[in-house]
Length: 408
Image 1 (tube, rainbow, N blue to C red):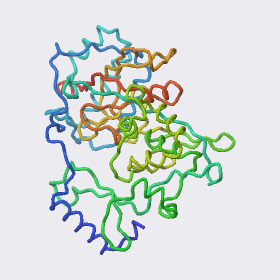
Image 2 (image 1 turned 90 degrees about the horizontal axis):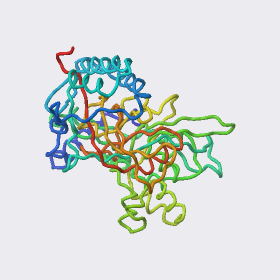
Image 3 (image 1 turned 90 degrees about the vertical axis):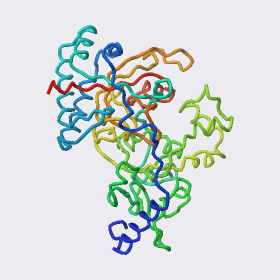
Image 4 (image 1 turned 180 degrees about the vertical axis):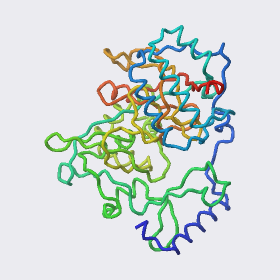
């Protein structure tokens, strides 16, 4: 439908968007934190102690994925580290230099001296205390079918034909950096309006006409959690695996149903987890619509081989990839986190998690990951990953590393 839109519709679209903005409907951008103030350069005496608790396992793979991203963008593309700017060419040199050093399997002291002498370290602004809240996500596995049946009635939708992606910077440079808008053209009024909400999509009996289902699931709760994770494996008949990945969203604001249930006194804050939400929904089937529709955001998927993929279009790596606010932090960058993780053998949400520090790559973003005090760690696709992602809600520190310019 979008491709068949007339020039008149396009003119209406342009007019409505411009009128909306000149009438004061601009997206609200936080003035106190920008990409120029999201990172603070550290003096060497303020560096954290760089220790990788996983002995660098999987790190070079993740670095290669970021290099794949940087090598397909223009070499002169700019990346902001606070007030400093580095090009994609420099980012490639930075990552390749760090990767080459890892081949020496350095001891902690040697690693820290290498970073001190050759790299600039920045710390994320975080919250008022300088802390960053780390949560986790993973790649879930659900049963599904390529055809709608009584056992599989809930569709995973593809990107709708009538979903418009409006880049405001195309109208004026003053809108550069603003959030892109998702919209549709109302069939009767021919006006541009926000895209359908989750409730409207679920209520539409003909939505499959504009959005062909990719696969069908047993449970709408499974579908909801698949949207939260952004990708997943679907086990079809005879054990065949179909991988689905994020394609687009309806542009409606993401709202946490976990926060909703806490505010409704349905789940205590200290007991909140992905697992707790699922259990509550299973015990209250008559309230599933109420809770799920609170989050008006809706995600559309596509079938792709490989993955899971982050927002850079490259594969994310378990415990080596993070998602941050892409407006504030440099994409693809080498990072270092200080957080907490459960023991790999005795995982228990009631026990104190162990302090952990890891090198990671900034390779993803998410609707709930906003501001300088949020980061989401990709945990993988096994039982440990599911447990960690479901319970992770820990404050820590986030650092960004880049090669000193004179090292080019």
